[in-house]
Image (cartoon, rainbow, N blue to C red):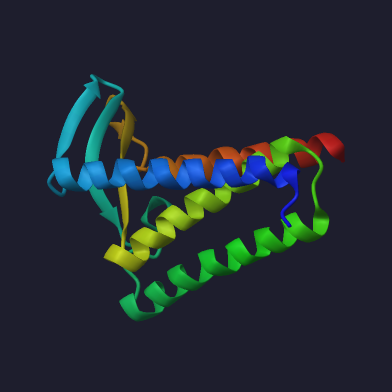
Length: 158
């Protein structure tokens, strides 16, 4: 039986995964590939790009066979590692479980994209003047916030 304390991690996981899938499906059905629509002029656009690599397009130009295998295996191994950590380490802080749930939800959302499209759907374009941050999505945001939250908890406790 799953302990009650794991519920927050499960809710975080499901929430991030569902929000990620819904937003990406919206982009796929309402924005042609490579389109862009300003939301906040000079700061934020909604775009539709597909990233075949990892963060910032790294590995995007590498041999598709090896890249695709690596980018399918890595998130699966990371998810298994996080599940092992959760159930064997059994963190007592709900913030850690919330962060891990978000990371796992984001990793699963991007993994689903890689299985479906052999690329990750990105749509948030943040920029200042001519300087653009690489486009990202809900899953990427959840992974980033989750990792920063974990770092905060572990640095605070060390």
